[in-house]
Image (tube, rainbow, N blue to C red; front, side):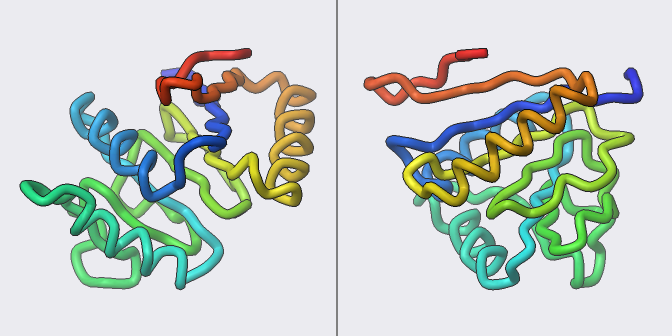
Length: 152
């Protein structure tokens, strides 16, 4: 692993975070990776927590909160600080949370709502700043059919 992770921007236009995040997490776990979800808002983490328990009738995604016991054992960890307590390889940034230190991660996902002008502008600024730092960036957007395609 190099010192810099891949940073993938996911531009939500047709789906919501609650529809997209569980699928991305499933793929992350299938790779044998752990995930860290960072949001600056505890109410957003509460909503994600609920979604991960209920998004599919026949299953749930094993997860926990960083401020609860056994955070280090969680395959998916929800955090306001972004401290990598579970040794995750994948970092998921939601709600304009700061990216922070990315050492130790293989991939970072910056997920933003393209229907929210403030979020869109924040993502554009973040892309520009990361590009100036020579980060390994990819930009993904949904097709009309709902599939994800790499656009940059």
